[in-house]
Image 1 (cartoon, rainbow, N blue to C red):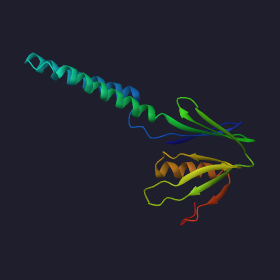
Image 2 (tube, helix red, strand yellow):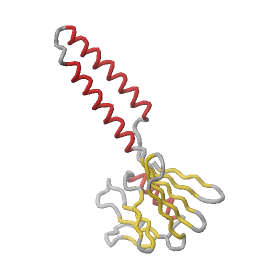
Image 3 (tube, rainbow, N blue to C red):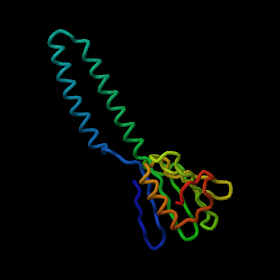
Image 4 (cartoon, rainbow, N blue to C red):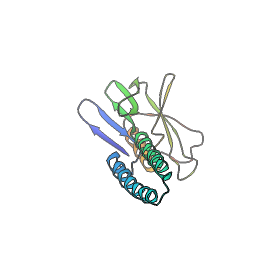
Length: 167
């Protein structure tokens, strides 16, 4: 998903992966699964198969851990702030863990077209000696939207020699 926020001082472009469900929805799924699994485990325990209880608990722990990990991974985002003098790129989960600042006059885009019609083009912001990949987690439509937003604000420095189409 790509969206933009514009104000008088700077333009901000935010790129983040698509999420099928929020953490609240995942918690609801986990609670329902724990209730179903717990009911089945208690039923088998009443029939004398008590060793099923720890396995049902481990299964729900594994499911909860997997749901949390996926939700955490999908909270990763790139925030590209375009100020009059500087292009700032921030990457991270929940808050910026990596940050770059490039002079606006030195910034340019490098575009590598997709090899397959379903793939997304590779977008890199570069400046003297620095290369910052942007939106590598985006699907094709979102990557093209990010590219369109950036092309209007940052010049394209080069295309890949594999370029078969004009971006």
